[in-house]
Length: 261
Image (cartoon, one colour):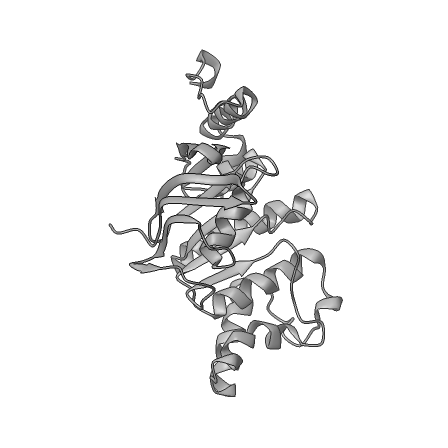
C-alpha cells in the first residue's frame, strides 16, 4: 500500500544549526501517526514541512507522488488555537474553504451541516465562536478542516487548551471521525497517554538532528474509542515502555519488564 505522506532524508537547517537531518518515514492511507516528544524536539517542524509552511533544506517531502511545494487544499491543519473567524457563525466558519472554491451556497450549507453533525455540534450552526466552549470551538475547527476533504489532516496539539474531561471526549471524537471518514492524520502531542490512545503508530522523536526517532506500533482493542482502553493492560504496558524510553533520553527502548508484559 503506497503511503499518503512520505519523507525521504528530509533535513532542515536554520542559522547554521541542524534541526532535522535525514528524516525518513511514511504514513499510510487512513492511518493516524502521533509525533511524540517534549517541546523543541521537532514535532511542529515536521508538521510545518508537511503543511508547506517550511521548506526542507535537503531531501524531499511528498503527498502521494507529488513533492510538497507549499500549502494546499490536500492538507488541512487543526491548530492548538481555535483559529476561527469570530464574526462568522459556526456554519459559515465550516463552509469557508468551500466558499473560497466558489461552491454554490446550497452545497456549502449541505456539506457544512453534515460536518457539524459529524463532530457533534448539531443545533449550533447559527452560533458564533464566542458563544461556544473551548471544546466546542475545537470541534468547529475540526469540522472546517473536514469540509475541505483534505488527503491528510494535520493536528498540532489541538486539545492542549481544554480541560482533561473535554480532552478525552475530543480524543474519542477524533477516533470516531477517523473511523467514519477514513482520513489520514498526523497528530502532534507531548502526552504519552494521548498518543497511545489515538495512534496506530507513535514516532518518539529523540534526536532528529541526526535523523533518529523510535517507532512504536499500537494495538489496542476495537472499538478504539472505548474509554476502557485507557486502563487496559496493552495501554499500560506500552505507556510504560514509551515513558522509560523518554526518560532514557537516548532513544534506547528497554525490553518489556515482567510487569509490562
